[in-house]
Amino acid sequence: MAEFTIDTPSAVSASPLVGVIMGSSSDWEVMQHAAAILEEFGVPHELKVVSAHRMPQQMAEYGSTAATRGLRAIIAGAGGAAHLPGMVAAFTPVPVYGVPVPSKYLRGEDSLYSIVQMPKGVPVATFAIGEAGSANAALHVVACLATTDAELRRKLQDFRARQTQAAQAMTVPPHV
Ligand code: RP5
Image (cartoon, rainbow, N blue to C red; front, side, top):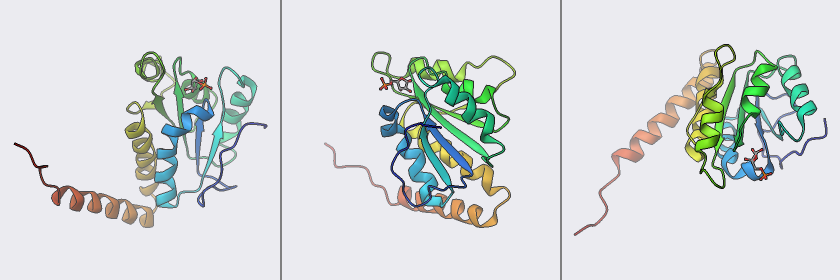
């Protein structure tokens, strides 16, 4: 496969459990937040551009080989007429988590509707538009993997505890 591959942080692996794919390198600004979560939790993953409409054969190959390559989840981000998550899901039984990327003209509402409105039979679990959706897709994958991985479950509990502590330390900003 001759797709673009983004520079590798340390949990990027030749034997990934999670595939993070996106329709364009321009999606990386959003998708880096999914990658950062997987990195933080030490989940082996790969990062690739797999465009549904510009690389349809590679997209089909990616989906068709995902299960045999050992992927347990695919996080797919795309913008506009965002058919990548649904089309990849059509090629694999591996769960697909869709991230709507903000688009130039419709600010990602088009991406959201394209991904969330899958017809019955081939689901794509769809997250919020942009950074929060990207990070949450990865956190959801971590939670799924943690159901059979005690160490990952402990890391997730620690992550939640740190969030709680940070929220408890918050104060209202100065105001009149
Ligand atoms: C989609 O088109 C991509 O997912 C991206 O969000 C959007 C724009 O792509 P570029 O024109 O920036 O390559 O396929």
